[in-house]
Image (cartoon, rainbow, N blue to C red; front, side, top):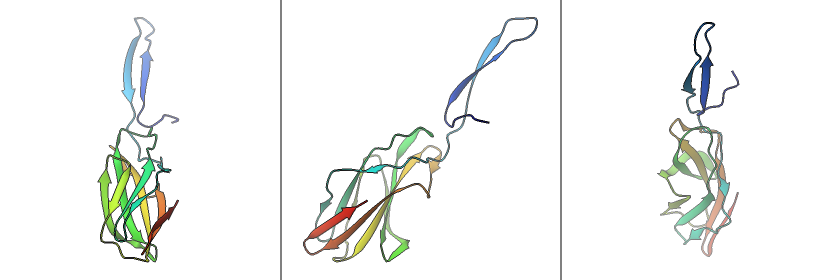
Length: 135
């Protein structure tokens, strides 16, 4: 116990009568617990579309693959309206309804998978004049 995920360790075996030998072993990656942070870059928006931005997450739990993202209506955060994968730090959504509150969730993805409980949540609401977003 006490080993870190996605890490390499050297093990030295020293027999009583003989030369020591060294082997290298590694641990598997773990589901990511890292969460990206909201970018200071303002969202790109129209009345019916939205692009949100986040800053890259520093990933140590496994080999980084990208980001999953999901769009929900704030009034029904159990139903995914749109989702996708990106290697970049942005997600775009189209055909949105004006004057509606949305939530975008962003998850880190590694070769070990993604953790549905570790995400950045971005609250947005559309309007006739634009969109405002808060983390």
